[in-house]
Length: 140
Length: 140
Length: 140
Length: 140
Image (tube, rainbow over all chains, first blue to last red; front, side):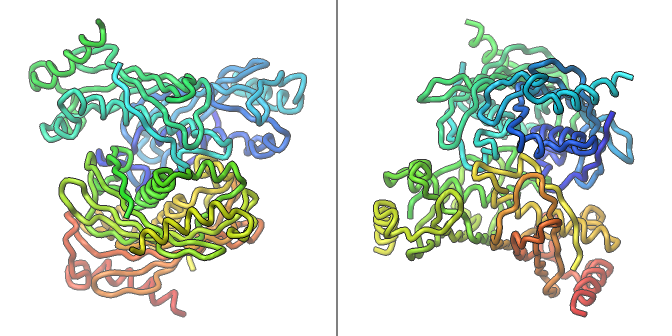
């Protein structure tokens, strides 16, 4: 599982003195963005080829709350991939305290920037191969 | 289903020129807050009685994207309730265009402000009765 | 001064149990957007005419903090206008408690969507007249 | 000037396809937090000693817009300090492109967590000395 580390900022918290639940959805986004970049093809490069992956669905389960100033490790991996969409899984843990903060999933369609679905394998074989390789690596 | 209307602001959008997916989770929060208030017991009143409902899980499915300056109608209802938690369902539609933007769910525990679970029916019978009444009304 | 009312949400707060200071900048945006709409020409209509008003600078002074679930009244008015830019002033007060939460200013350029400055009076006389009228009304 | 690097995320952008202006205020917060930590006394440690620095005012001037996926370098330094408050200055530049994105200021009071002003030098001499040292270093 790919991992990236984020420091919880003041603006991430709410009056319960923990990270607001909606901000975990942003943490998921950071992780999948850094994952693609780390593997060699950033999302912004994909966009330049008129390829985007709009979020079709997202879900999160909250375990122990993360708090201000904590470093959290966001793990992510491609759990499923087809010609039309893929699913990413996430886990968020405290770097020092090892707490299991949250896990989640997001599902992404394969479209052009006008949000029209595209057959990825045919239209963007490089990207399809790249994403499939990431998926295969995670299965091992 | 209770409904409240929100205007999409510039800060809700992202560079895809649609509402960023994480912001729907905020829209859900607005709806459930306004629902409780409209029915007679605001969440801030509950907090004063040392009762909170932390989010245990949340999910959203995205249909047609909402855009800047659109008025969206966020519907919500209590779909399940037990002594320890409840589930709320949401639907977001365009007020003028009738587009089905998103639907979702959130599950909430019943705890005190220290996040310790409390047996709601026993410890806070007024709140339990209130939430159960909302649930029953929605079943009709 | 034009006024619009907003309910402080949970996601607006931080672990100091007050509204996070960056969110007042968002409140300013809500007010100026609603102001233009209420006066008859919404910002989204202006955008359709290839006219936007990017923020050149913003400032806020924080007085008494606003808290969760409070209704706040955001006032705004056009304080200055020229052919190339305008300045808007804001005041945020508690609706019930009358507290003076914050005041601020934003300065906006007049450009096309490609962020190229345009001589507003010449290129978009309708918008120029509209904004100038708002400015004149506030001077009285 | 202390510097920290942040990657612009999708959720930072708006439909103008640039970073939303309110998010620069969050970038300022990241920089001052990392500055204090890097110098040896994190803000969360200060909070534990019942010392906080609420934002009294903030301002930002926007130059060239920052865009998605760009790495930005946020510089900050303590520009003024007294017994009751301090002022921090910020500059945001593109790491690769060298663009000058924005500059700004924030002013902070010295209070306890109940937001009551405290005479810093007398009540928290360690923190006062620490902040004064940072200020002095920046003057050189």
